[in-house]
Amino acid sequence: MRDVPGSSDPLVDEMFATTHRLRSYVDGRLAEKGTSVARLRALRFLAHAAEPMRMRDLSDMLGIAARTATSLVDALERDHLVVRLPHPTDRRAHLLALTDAGRSCHEEAEDLDREALSTATGALTAEDRATLRTLLARIRDTVDTAPKHPQPSGKPHGARHETRPRPD
Image (cartoon, rainbow, N blue to C red):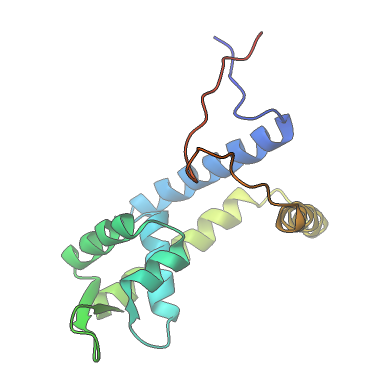
């Protein structure tokens, strides 16, 4: 069975495959200490916040749906890494803060993350790294400045379009 491309551009397929493989590798390393990239990202935002934050703010920072953030925070709270505190002015809301165990877990996970990423990118020279960062920035800048196309009428934003199989 041959590989099915994920896009119409082999370069983009390579970028997605590399990102997926890198995330799987780092997740595997973090799993050794009972955490994951998703948990590390949440712990990272909470550790660097000047004060406890609302769930909605964490969700926005992580770029995930509120429901996903709630599940993530529930697991962190269950593991005694995060606490929910009453919001001082909104009795319906809670603020999120790291516990001492959460700070310790965050520090350990950051060390593992740094080590794993160093291993993964260890074959790149300083010049390779600079070139790759420049090229990736150029792609991001192009996407950021590309004209935005409105959604076709009759299709809600985010609706999936029907696709046909690609001919061989």
